[in-house]
Length: 191
Image (cartoon, rainbow, N blue to C red):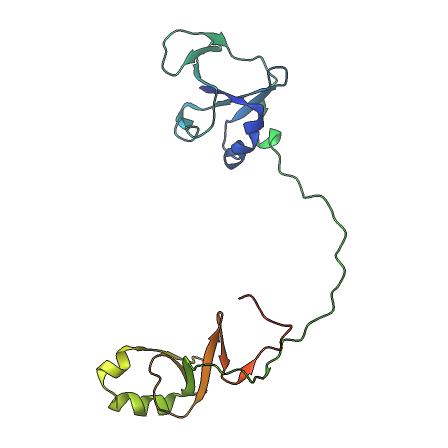
């Protein structure tokens, strides 16, 4: 059996091991110490814990340092408590519900700001007709995405965009918006 001595303020670090079978804890508030005993097979699992001392316990409860051969102390008498009971998970404290805020309508408005097109939304048929005649060099700088929901629409990004009729779009953060449209001034999303 392994017996580890830890500072009391390191108790939270035992959280990931809370449900391990056979792990028990004894708290010594006078010395501000926490004792942990666990099966011999837990040596690797306990290697990252900030122990002040690490022991092996013999059948009589004597503590032998990991690197030693002679007992140097006795295991605390207890009370020993299962780790999952001692380190119980509780519900967070209750709080009052927040007040409802007035809703902000998300909408696009015509913009006087000029934006450079960086994407093109077009019909899939138009894209296929153009792509069949375009050179490989012209296609290599573009990325394509087709709508899976039907409707035969595709989005093309890259430069230069194909000379095909469609809706020119630009990137606003992670959004793709039609050119000539923007969010109203007080509403600038931080995406």
